[in-house]
Length: 223
Image (cartoon, rainbow, N blue to C red; front, side, top):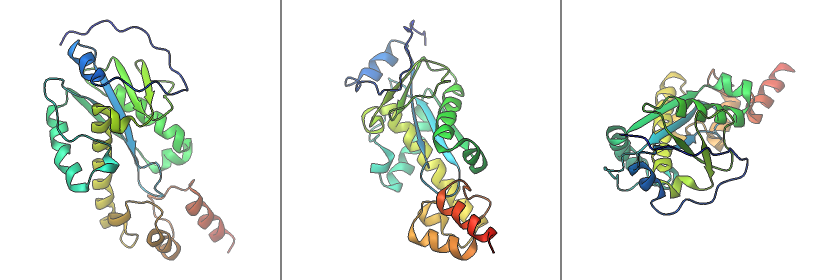
């Protein structure tokens, strides 16, 4: 696919206007590769942050794409192989708990987004990121789009890849760290998770910088 020249975009801390309907598809058809970028797992107390970037093929539309949070687990699993098979490019990266603790969750998210876009082959000409902030070190111009995971097909696809990847990891983690219920709550701070954390203490996959885990460790150090 021959790429068209892309004008330089200046990264802004403010979200971009909502894209026009089919704007992404029209750009891709002209050879301007748009990567949708989204994450899963900012809120959990345990496990990695998953970040995905996806460039869709304008000649192969995937029906049913939406914000992963609005889809059932079965629907996400059904869409996952379609995205993998038909995307022009995709990349999923993980930011592990120790790096999240070192950077903080916001910077870890920005870092993961930059890595995911940088890992695309062929490379994207623009990155459209879900949310209101752009990473400063994106390898290409970017747009921050609030609610983009429900508006832009490639961002929807990225949200699905990130969510499915992380959920699968948390299922496997449940077998490695039994008793916490990771297979059920995926590391989010549910009452059951907090009760297990109180009973068992943190495991290696818990984020030490997150308040419930940090406070428990601080209390344990007092006795």
